[in-house]
Length: 620
Ligand SMILES: CCCCCCCC/C=C\CCCCC/C=C/C(=O)SCCNC(=O)CCNC(=O)[C@H](O)C(C)(C)COP(=O)(O)OP(=O)(O)OC[C@H]1O[C@@H](n2cnc3c(N)ncnc32)[C@H](O)[C@@H]1OP(=O)(O)O
Ligand SMILES: Cc1cc2nc3c(=O)[nH]c(=O)nc-3n(C[C@H](O)[C@H](O)[C@H](O)COP(=O)(O)OP(=O)(O)OC[C@H]3O[C@@H](n4cnc5c(N)ncnc54)[C@H](O)[C@@H]3O)c2cc1C
Image (cartoon, rainbow, N blue to C red; front, side, top):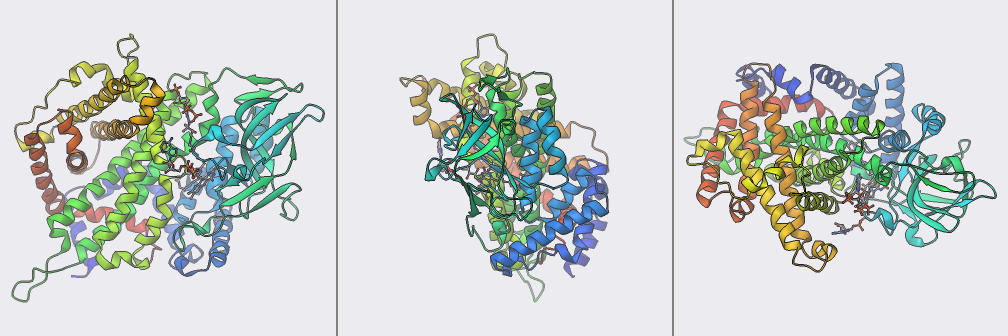
């Protein structure tokens, strides 16, 4: 039976309402309809073809990218697409391009850190793309350590200007997307200096190129940093290098929403946390989490198609060979990735709500949830991108030799995706930020300040430090409350153990440095608990459609128990579960794999069919 006939056959046998499952995956009926409409628009437009991009030279690839970006903009205007539809169209074009940074960072930074006048001045031009911006924070010498940035912005009271300068080679701006060829403006992060005093890093809008002939302006040295990982991949993006030689800008080109410099040169730190200067990174990190579920689902789609169609060994009396998806090893590698795609989808939906909530609170000068939002966006960005990058490589390996062919779509997907583990914050550095938040919470236990939100379980640490999982049979692991308590106990015990061990050092900084690896692992445990708990919360919602909720419950158990199996050492070492209970979890996982496979092939194939539309123009 041909693959597509097989798919059609399986769809007819669906154990659940496939149409309703599409709505769950998309987040809402409206979101699904927009996705479906825009995906068809992109897939049917030959200008947006992607199957040739790995064969193009860097120069032709870049020209192809500009052509697509211009065509996308033209279609957005012609079809009067909404902001959501336009964002979807850029997403489905699926080629890193300067507009990612113009729309994804330059504009949000002005909205988040500029004052009212600055928003009114710059946003209309940016929305019409009369100016094209990039986000120029990272330097050759500093990326993770933002407070180590060296570019200076020195206020000149004589002329009411800032002088932007690159004092050292390592202060050269390095990496900003869109900088190398396209951007006319940049949001520069530089050390604000007034009257000889250094006030730390702030944002400044600087014009780089002429709006007439696009040539660099006086004092500006700018260019592309060259080829990156892979052939096509991120080479469609003009990541650039930028140096300033005493470039003068007006005082009102410093973003003044967080702090100000008066005409007299007086630095004014408004009563908002200085970390709001980092707000754009927080915004993008929460978007990256949703993006992880998309990238992961594409890889799972390809590997599932392959696993369902590919046959190898096992022929009896000349009959067909065995489908590789029947092999337990194939199932134990593939199904947790399918489940992870749904888990990241749901935690991404929740994170989008958390970010929207903090944005509204900030407008009312309520900064109470800022630390948690930082910890959640940093932690979830780190954990979901690391897992997704590993998963795409695993999907390549699941497809044998064919997974290594460009035409499989996997090598390109991997090459485009993996920098997500670095950009918007190196994943290890971000985990250490989560650890800092955890240690601060543990240190405040007993102070009367009740932990809330995603860290509320720490308020029950006395119980969690001594509880025993009530698991005597494999099926006991199918109870969400049993799984949740196991993950809470593991996270609480790892954090409390780190906090106790920190006390063995002369000071917190020394302890943090020596225990960094343990702290990063405790951060992962905390973040995985968040993902598990948000999946449970999703299952507690009203989920329409025959059999849909049942499928999601199976995927939840696959996700949680495969994580427990992978990190069994943590769970047993921290005393949360016994080795026997760990063995029962693994036994239950095996039973679940057979369910996912035999009772629900349409779930896999549904993912294939829905995501196939996303892959329409991928050549595989
Ligand atoms: C753009 C596209 C949009 C759509 C996305 C779709 C999917 C993506 C697909 C394609 C797009 C690709 C885009 C790639 C573009 C890439 C861009 C970049 O990479 S931009 C540069 C990113 N750089 C970083 O992330 C730097 C990481 N480093 C930092 O953030 C900071 O240096 C730090 C590590 C946090 C340390 O900062 P600092 O030294 O100032 O602080 P600390 O001393 O550690 O902590 C002091 C207290 O401040 C709190 N804190 C720190 N950060 C924040 C924050 N962001 N928000 C709130 N609070 C914060 C910290 O917790 C400490 O608090 P206390 O412990 O003192 O209470
Ligand atoms: C494809 C791509 C696009 C990018 N786009 C942009 C952009 O548009 N704008 C922009 O401003 N930047 C951009 N960046 C830069 C990106 O933000 C930085 O690369 C990132 O912040 C990491 O900084 P770094 O490269 O200087 O590495 P470092 O910060 O020097 O880190 C190097 C290594 O040291 C480790 N390390 C560092 N500090 C610690 C610590 N305290 N504890 C333990 N380990 C540590 C890290 O884990 C890392 O492995 C982009 C990067 C890439 C790859």
